[in-house]
Length: 583
Image (cartoon, rainbow, N blue to C red):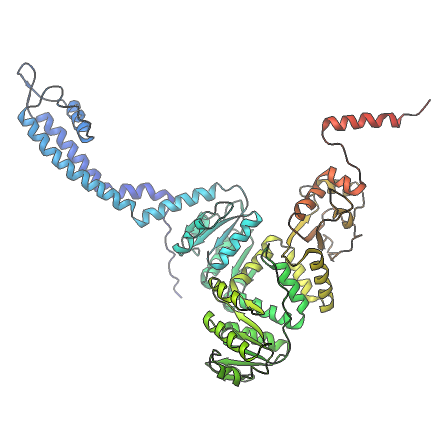
């Protein structure tokens, strides 16, 4: 199959040559006019103060032409011109007006030239990326998902570099209030040269996120990242199974299909509601409050729209042995489900599908207006219906917010949640897998414990490794053979009788002796990695506990160490008499 060629990117070093190429003819014309003026003035006869014939030298002719062209006008020097000289100057003035008009017109045309603007923007973008000295993520695609991720990364203190093909979407970056500048470029992210300019091989680049609406572009980005920067983690969106399989064959570690993800989540919600609530609470957008929804009931369901999303929902219900009736304009491929022809926006099709006896409905068409119409009509026919509503466009959130659905599926939010869960702390993914493998009773216990302690606001989730760089004070004590437990570390350095508003969720050890919800009396070891969840501020306080010797000593012993050189010396002098023995 013939692959379309990549669009050439305007090279940043071609700006000067592009301008000179466009100005070539006007500059030649101006130089010719000046040369002709100078030559004519040297040939035209003049008269000096004594009445003798006088000819201007090349220097004086060029001097006169220069200050005349710049409108300075020193007059006729060194002597008053003859009529022949003035006639030649008159001709040259009109010629130079034409030459300058042509040149200025060309300059204005160049300034409005799209290629030149793109080249200048590329040059500015490349310089901004080259000067980034802090870790940043390369985000390809600034749609709804890209915008959510950029805001979340900005809140977490990470820089972002954005590539987006749509100029109108890129233009919104300046309108959004980011704490740090976000370098952006309007270009095709599937072009490897564009990715290199955007910092794919930059030493501070810590990850690539491919979020365009084109699966082939996301695949090209994943391949380029795998070949040009194999050390970088890559997260790519893929809605087609073939694309996902191709990405997996290239070793793409994180492939996100929002519909498949929600299908798994729905199956989990039907199978283990507490686990579903717990996952939603841990992976929500930081700072948002998660409302506790009622659990999806088991019984007859109605599904409207048997497209890509609808098929995955039917698979999820089949896996939980939940009966479902499909409403669609076209009959489904399999004959195992009851099918009603229609779109579900009218009461006739819903009644025929048995909406009055159903316990839930999935409005899953590709039209937001149709989905809202289905949900409103179905709720009027059955007040107790559990409603799952698909929201295709994030911009319609005001409309969807006005309708009280039980679950609103927003693909952009699902992808953003998944990316943030992976980006914010890689240790979260294995912990979430552990939750999915546990029984409902354990998940309900953990959800009740965590929400009673931390509330329903999405907590900060982070990981800490006990090593010399991250936890120097704790690491040194452990290397000296001291035994320190989790319970001791989770105390406040302001008052050691109070505990920090955070919990240790997962403890990973080099010998694979990992612990889920480790007990409070669990002793930590050098090299351990902890996954924690807590309220805002707890992360900084916990980090201070394990990094600062004075704080760690206080929470372990209840004794304040003297701070500073002077206080340490005074404390040592104070201790010396106590060591002396009486004669």
